[in-house]
Length: 118
Length: 114
Image 1 (cartoon, rainbow over the protein chains, first blue to last red):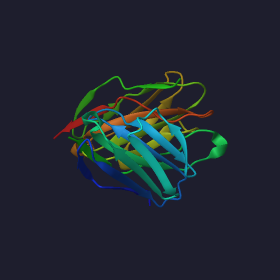
Image 2: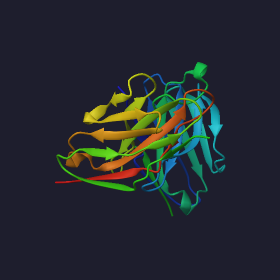
Image 3: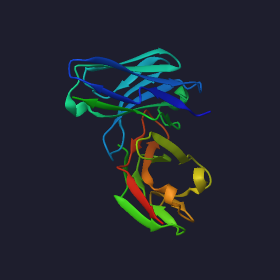
Image 4: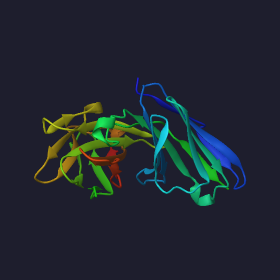
């Protein structure tokens, strides 16, 4: 099973709201990723978690706050977002082979959360 | 630094004809290469990857890709296109050593006409 699930599918929020995106996988993967994708553009990496610890933060604004409560779950907490943050937010997971020193294993993506900030 | 080029924004092909979606890459050392497909309002689906070995890689849904080291290319191919293959295709690369993440190309929209 190579399934990554994400909830909710769609989210509309105002600029003062606080909301959370959730991601879950049961493939035993120890690397999990958050990406942001604008329409017809490639995904942009936001965060990488390795063994439940934040490994990469691609200079993402602090209004995005990731959390990895256990090896199967990844959350993205949203607060005081801007309209330009409207996008498809994708979660992915992969094996994490620490000996290889990078995140180059096959990533499996969830269906995404379509976020609209008003 | 690694990079990926997908020179075509869009590829049009008639159903039943062969299709090719082009990808060239730049990376230090040997590459890991991937193709992903994205259907409308969906996440990315893994199609195939090259790590080492046979230059012709077979993947899901009848797709294959040929790794050409001298031309630094990894073109995606299918012998007979289906209308349902219409989607956005992304090539991605990572060096096979050192600390890195995947770098995605800009994407190529494939449109298969009936």
